Amino acid sequence: MASQTDPRYLRSRAAILDAARELLLEHGPTAVTHAQVSERAGVGRATVYRHWPRSDQLLSEAMTTVPMSFFSTPTIPVRDWMRTELTKMARQLEHDAVRAVATTLANTALWDTNMDARRERFASALAERLAAALDDAEKRGEIALRTDPRSAAALAIGPLHYRSTIEHGAIDADLVEAAINAVGTWR
Amino acid sequence: MASQTDPRYLRSRAAILDAARELLLEHGPTAVTHAQVSERAGVGRATVYRHWPRSDQLLSEAMTTVPMSFFSTPTIPVRDWMRTELTKMARQLEHDAVRAVATTLANTALWDTNMDARRERFASALAERLAAALDDAEKRGEIALRTDPRSAAALAIGPLHYRSTIEHGAIDADLVEAAINAVGTWR
DNA sequence: TCGACTGTGAGTCAAGATGTCTCATAGAGT
DNA sequence: ACTCTATGAGACATCTTGACTCACAGTCGA
Image (cartoon, rainbow over all chains, first blue to last red; front, side, top):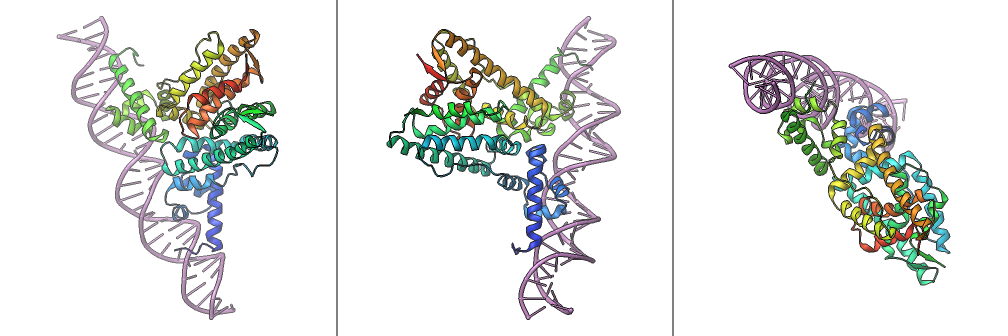
């Protein structure tokens, strides 16, 4: 229906997504309503309805505008790569916006199939990339894995996630190092 | 105002809390409204307002009716005690209600100071009990800790929490064993 | 520059949710 | 039997929600 290259359309869309992300960050997912978003975005309330008829879709899409670090393609030695990537993830988890997205995703996924699919994609991507890297490292004799490589994500990312979302504490280098050592014995 | 021993008062209170907990479990925290709770509990809408003027207080209190396992007093050897306690926690995390409470707590704590205080108490209790047990185990030479003992909770519970709330997967004995080994080197 | 097109803002409207209040009633304690 | 009080039903004003209309202005092709 809409020419999605129209500058007016794109302007409204961006303003709405920005406002929705800010509201999520500042007041939580329940604050992402058509009325509040339209007021903060400086657009008409009807415009928000035209772009996103349901507010949960808007929330879902606003969450994707927050940058979350996935794992990049592994380098050798894998241990150094893991340290780099987990440190990157630790820095991300220090941002309130990332914590807000992470906890909102985990929570809403329990009742919203759309969010659950997003959670599943995210979890699978992390688990697979880490498993592939560690599989390779084990073949090259760099590490003796302690478990199924598909458990490495839980063992390595779990501690950072817990420290950030449950303990609300800083992730120091020691914790990252311990998380690296948790997946197996490095040579 | 109210005689808090009046059977009518206690009956209403219990029915409301039960209904609120069920709604949280089945449809998430946003479903815990005065209207929906009163209907499910079979009490008048005004009665819910009388007991809990604000719905977030009701949600908060309903969450406490879900049993969540803390760590019991440690036994020796600490390694066996940890295995028992983490397995107990893993079984708890398989229940939808526990997952719902855990993720709702982490999420709402970011914007609700009342929930944040509850999160802090929970996290501190777990971290302190585990740290005390491991401190003792290290003094007795049962383990060489890999990090500050206050990081043990993140290293041991983090993987279970991540597996349950992010990966939505089962926590098998291997993962529990790996989590135990993550905190240090056992003798 | 002109004209057709279309996304937008402001506003209206009905339906539903929300919070407060009143009052008759029935359950509880004496 | 008598008093007290928590309750259910309902009334009520207010706010929210979702859908709709319409004049207007920004955009783009001619």
